[in-house]
Image (cartoon, helix red, strand yellow):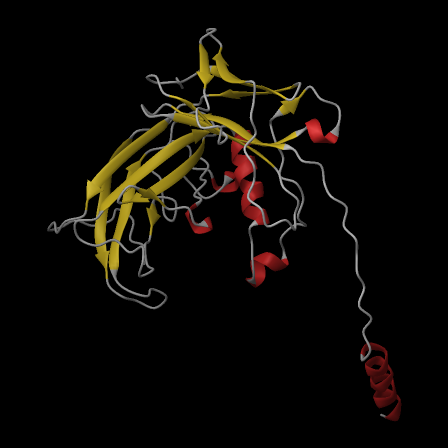
Length: 302
């Protein structure tokens, strides 16, 4: 027993004095950041270009001013994006850009370097309807509110990757919990349900917090965006790097640069880019929450 207490005393004596070690971190190379998620909606399409900043800097990211930004499809149609305010937001607004089954190439030229990326526009299923049901305050829910469920059936014959987005009163849910990435309408590639109805929790997003719960007269919108397998993998890496706290953080993989599909003609690190280019077809459905006798979810959530 004396030996045990002696060992403990030695450990405390070794750890009781701490030396402050200052590590000098070298500045990283400033690179282009590409945020290019375009779709088939009849609304302005925006490609956001910024420059990276040093990790410990508190300044905002600066706009990347390019010589030209355009998308070219496999039918040789050209879509030129303009940045009228020089704020890094390059916009194209002329009818519909993305069409099913076409291949699109993004081209960015700036600072003597050319950046490019290629993406395919996969099909997307229609949303048949939206159901809703009132859920009273329960354990784990701060208050009562309406649950909204999308009714849609996965496309048949191949692995389909989707991004399901929810809007309340026209505002997207941008929380990490709102990044909904099903494969074939189910949870993951391991539990695919080819050609089947979308199932919970993919099909039903509970709005339980006081600030985002749905009430009568609120507008609820569901969107399904078609993705490629590569874009699904990109979002999965982003999710993995945003884990904080709890058992999930314990088993998260070490932080590393999220992969990119932006290719550069430059050879130096400063001439490389990060970010992603994606082309999606989008289906959507909107309802206004109202009292409706007999209205309920297809799949009970509890």
